[in-house]
Length: 639
Image (cartoon, rainbow, N blue to C red; front, side):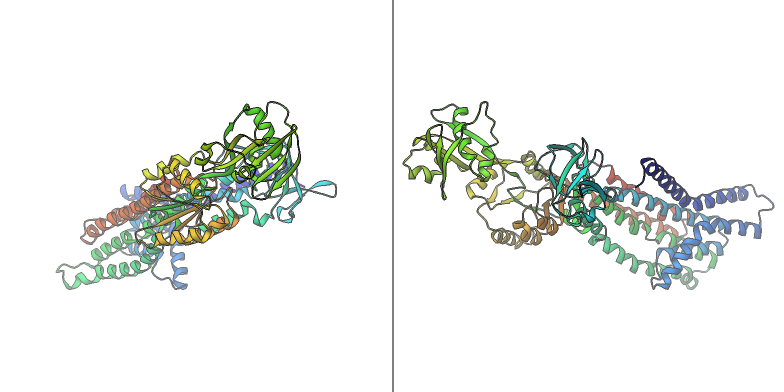
């Protein structure tokens, strides 16, 4: 086992090695730049020895550090069958510049191209930073309790049901249930939220979370390969491999565009011979070389994938995982949003909404009710038992369950009935008329066959549910639907509270799917569905974009969805839409910039009005501007 000192020293050495590797990347460009500046200075002052073969050798040596890798890459591409690439264009243009004696320009073109590639590499690393950072949260080890003590082993070797220990500052290696009384966790790797998440005994904890306070113990509920963090890593790695339609189009375009450019350059060189009286081969070759440099599709090929990487990185930083650039693009077209209710807009947890006592004060009334509900395991009973009494609770006896109606028993020497309206009717208990208008879950109570009051139990709205609907309207999505398996009366009430105009309840999974299929019959509808349960999986798959709540959502829903919201906040859907639109905007800005500048300089170059330096700007300069534009995504906020 490594000591802490050895571990720190290894991390320090790795850091130095990383810095050293990064510096080595820039050395060829620095050498070429230095030699180019010296050469231009010697030319300017017309130094006597800097003539003829000395000048050729000097600029040739300046060219090699940046030019040789590009020429080699072009040759390797040709051997693989990809003849017309940007490497070939740059090689022809710069070697051609040497052939006509334009040595400084030949070196400069290749140097700026190399610098552009370095900027591209740095920008891509930055854009991927938030995605790659997830790889660092993969837990490396687990302290599992075996043979009477905690042993350090690989998380992949831990079985379901084993007890593991996590110390302060360490990552939780596997999903599980907290055995300790409480824990404070940093779940930023999973949710994008850096604030501490307080968890209590019996609650779920997820792999990748960092323990902030005290030694804690958990019992594992999943193997490592099925844990939250492993699933996220898999989705992220797959996301970077999936290309958007725009990205695929540009790459196909470049493959067709490049050979056309090469043949046009040949035409610019040779065709004027038949039409121009004072034709000079060298002049027209120079124009053709300018044409080639300008025509290089680097700006497009670099900036568009980079734009999508930037969007994916920005989204993951905000706790939103797109499973590919294609879904980032599809999100920009969404105009119809369909939502599940429970677990999406509501917390999916029953809470007491209202207590109405008749003939008793609230505390006395709740003593009778709590005594009875303590004998039940129903979710509604659990919600009622959350109520805090100021005094000691009563004890129930002779409790029996009446199927489909509720409970009957003895509390404090009195007969107590707890249940629904059917139970009250069976025992001829008259209830308040106001209960007829209540649509939420009701628990009615009678004491010695006299109505004593009721408790309203309801699922709580998520804190950002209302603001989400308002924000969706602001971003132009007005066709919003809510579909739920809950009672239609409750569904309509929640819809009214959230100001959602279209809502349907009492739906089975196939009913939800049918409703979405009806919406899809309108070709103008681009539909996103947000859900969290197993029953939502068919609709998630059928929608143009399926969005799953990843914190509390089922594994099936998360696997089926195209986008995963790690924080379970519906407001993140608005942020996902904004990020996707910003990404699309930047991608098209880059396309417009590249085509616009290139077209202008192409015309000037063919007419002999542009030099190789303008060509360098039109190619490498535009690529750099496009890269800088794409990097803006990392600095944007979408609140």
